[in-house]
Length: 330
Image (tube, rainbow, N blue to C red; front, side, top):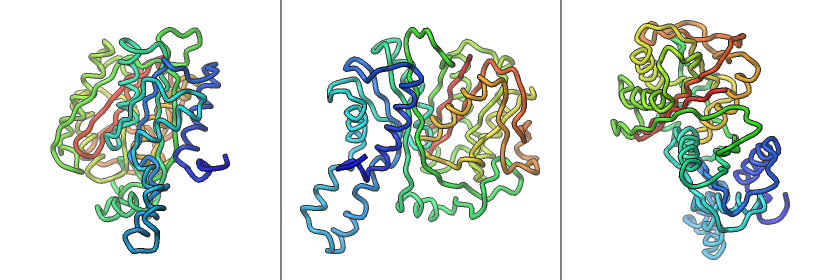
């Protein structure tokens, strides 16, 4: 892509994923009455971060900084996505920025929109790696120098990544790959960055997702956990899952050992992997998992394997106590 948008990696990622989803769904374009829900935590940061630093140090002229800083609002990225897909500036658009829970929460919101607002919703997440993001996580001592090891006894932190994932949701579809059967959102407001030690908010979100889907815990075939590989996140999520299933053994996995943690886009990217796995009749394993942590005590799926999957519980946790869970079914 040339011109003004050529260097906009967030937009290019989003358009590439959105177009692929629309091609799969047979959508010719994004119409004025179609919804668009975008999940992100960095947006178009790379378009203005260096200009900001340059302006602060006197290297970049004020006019150039102002022109670059217009890319800062997350809503601007959503607008550019709609325009890039051939739509007009009018439409039902929303941006979700609930940290790492954003992509999963956006899917739940899209399901609500289908019931009350739109016949079709394009929903997804996009994230690009930025210096501010990397240094922020480094300052929190959450980064691992080695590949992440979700739920492993020797886990040492997360691997940041980038990417995009989008879905076309329809109120009535003749060609459906899967459906969002239920969703649940909570905010435990325990700490700015740490989850509740017992995963209390996460447990409520998963419980509400199952209730929304009209399911009993015994009907869940597979749990795709948040599983970042950080010490406190995995422990809190493990405790929440143990409380939810109360002794029942259900396969649990996290794919972040393969693709890293794409923050606000992670839920969307991982749900795309889940749908693909469900269609192929298998579950995905947990790369990096070698030795079980006795404090977590879950049935962690080590490798990909065949399984007749009908219902998958996707769980996500974010900074600020944001929790989101969805039930995907086929």
